[in-house]
Length: 178
Image (tube, rainbow, N blue to C red):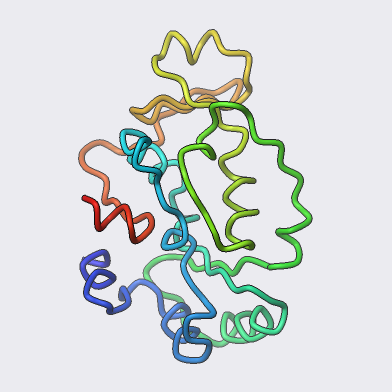
């Protein structure tokens, strides 16, 4: 339902803070998931990306400190929706240290927004993509994932992809290709 609302240019019922910020800031605020494009050659990783990102897809991204202050002010006064909403601090995200691994989930996406880019690289850069459970067990990386969404975060293994279909929400171009 929420994805249909997004496609129709309406905002999901689950995101009252996003609605309030869009009214106040217009296009200067966006949900993180709308700013992440899955590369065409990486579409088979799309469900794993969606599942791994989870609620981070709905993080609100603003470009500067002034808009961040507006967002935090509204965060305090806007009643919560069905989903938790978070605001990304544009200065703090630029201070995150990220070293992206070769073959990581980060290599499967494109992000042009500079604030979103720093955060997405932080989230995905150390998660190495592997083709099988056998490879997942053999790889020395502390964090890895299979296309089916089996995630290794040493010492744990878990499924990040829920049973059944996952709603694809990332980007605009990729959804148009589908």
